[in-house]
Length: 180
Image (cartoon, rainbow, N blue to C red; front, side, top):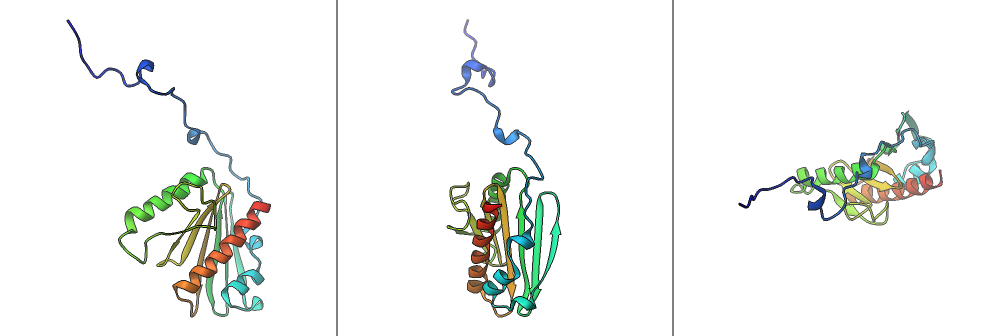
């Protein structure tokens, strides 16, 4: 008599590769970033990129354990915001953000994620190290276990100018953060 069945999926003899626990399940280490967003980009750098005068800009910091935010405003700058997220599993969270953006907004040209190479780590999940969303005027980049977001709202800026400003500022922020 021969018994045929599905068997136990976890039986060692049925696996093609050895079972090993995913490194993504290991706890990450919080509080490892010493940088502050308002020091990563100076008002002069933000002013040059946005066409404002440095003396017109004021910065508002907001810092917590794994998140640092700086928002500059003044003159034609309604808001230029830099957010640096250094919480554990940044690459996985970056990919999840991108996947959700594609899943929910790919059919809407203004909310569709438009990938940008040359800003963050282009070898990360998703095909590019950064993406731009027109509707929110926000660039999201991944680099060196950090997510960097730059949002640009400047009077008179269309999509092209806002995106170029965000790319300039994100590249600068990524380079500064690599040094810290």
